[in-house]
Amino acid sequence: MRRILHIDMDAFFAAVEQKRCPELIGRPVVIGGSGDPTKRGVVATASYEARKFGIHSALPLKTAYSLCPRAVFLPVDYEAYARESQKVKIILRSVTLAMEDVGIDEAFLDISEIGKPSGEISQLIKKAIKDETGLTCSIGIAPNKLLAKIASDMDKPDGLTVIMPEDILSILKPLPVRRLWGIGPKTEKSLKDMGIETVGELASLQMEALVDSFGPSYGNYLYHASRGIDDSPLITDWEPKSISRETTFQKDMASWQFIAKTLADLTKDVVTDMKDSSFKARTVTVKVRFSDFETVTRATTIPHATDREDEIRKAAFASLKRVELKKRVRLIGMRASHLERTDA
DNA sequence: TCTGGGGTCCTACAGCCA
DNA sequence: TCTGTGGCTGTAGGACCC
Image (cartoon, rainbow, N blue to C red; front, side, top):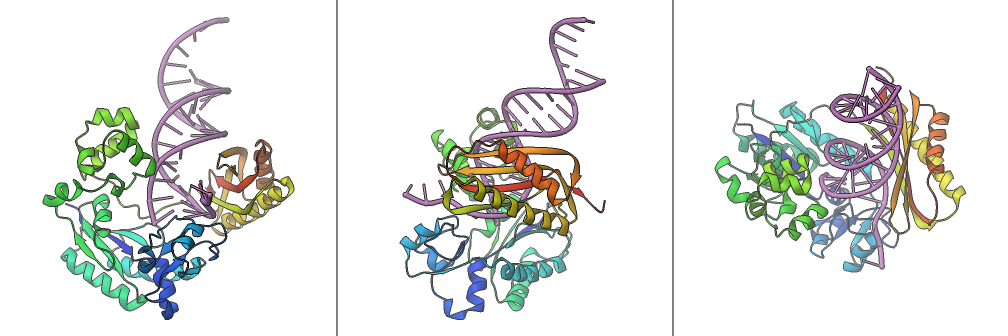
């Protein structure tokens, strides 16, 4: 039986801001976009005080402001959070190298090979993180990643939850399907239309029914996930498959010149990123989102991988020219993929 | 009404080729 | 020579994650 830990930092961005600015402690704090709630942007993290007003991640800043005008709105300072994240990851790697990074504020550890009780290891991690960063985390312990992630979410903040094999089904059964990793708003709605709202109800469906409704890959995943079955390994080393930049305009744009200038700027940023991380790319995809949220992509593949800005910009503009700009444009983005290492 | 940015993976389909 | 099949690659869109 594997022993997997999921470590999840509590309201991470807000906690970092409250640490460096202690007068924010105890106040509703909302981090997102440029920090100006009258501008376009969404909430990245809300402090627990702000969550009491119904503010949560992905909520438009304007909506968050209407829910709690007296909240403190701050811009995302990604570099500051990355520095704290680094400290946490160093602590986790000192426990075991069997660590999977899941974004800036989460990680999985496989502690199966460590000859100490899971609870003891978890308490040591929590104390080390608190001593080193002043921040708290919640930890879930379970036989696989799927369940460890559910466990870490069961007692927040500063919690520690163990799911024992004999308790898996009774814990899963009453949970709303949305709590399973991989079930988002669309699948939740599809399941609701089928009369399925809890993980227990999902587990009552036959494999054939799930495959019919959701396809072989996802249907199979849902069948097993609803039973708490997950054999997926930890991904300890990872290579990017694409590098991209996109930007949403403050106002929807009709000027081709302005859109083209923005695309050239995004290309420059992507190429800088590629060179910094020693990648060349073969495929350049341009993404355009119109004022009504319709989103189209156009891709151009060049015969050889390159990190030359002029070649990549040419491919980006070849892609852009294939988009009919019939409506005002809300967002423009570009992505480089089919990456190859330059030092390989 | 409003809906960011940086990613991954899956599906469907079309064209090419053996 | 014609037709069918299956693999591979590229393209486009969609769902999901943090």
